[in-house]
Image (cartoon, rainbow, N blue to C red; front, top):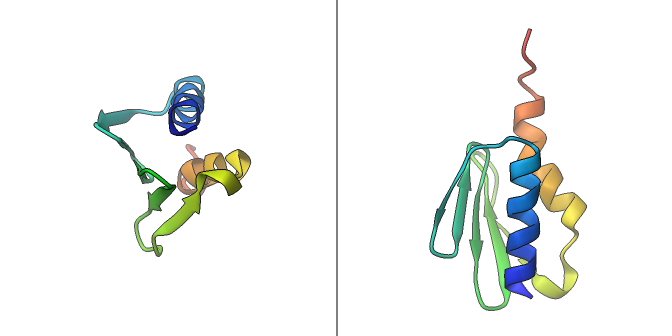
Length: 77
């Protein structure tokens, strides 16, 4: 399950032309750090508490929203 979720997130980041770096089970973007563990996904964002999301209850729309929210607050002029 972790692999399919990770692949979906990476596909979204590619489609959204977001830069990211992969180190083991961690994906780092400009807005968040995603860490994949055996039982849950950890999302760390600057100024926000860590979110632990069990794989069985993941809402991909919510995750993708969290990854893009901060960039939407700084629109290009």
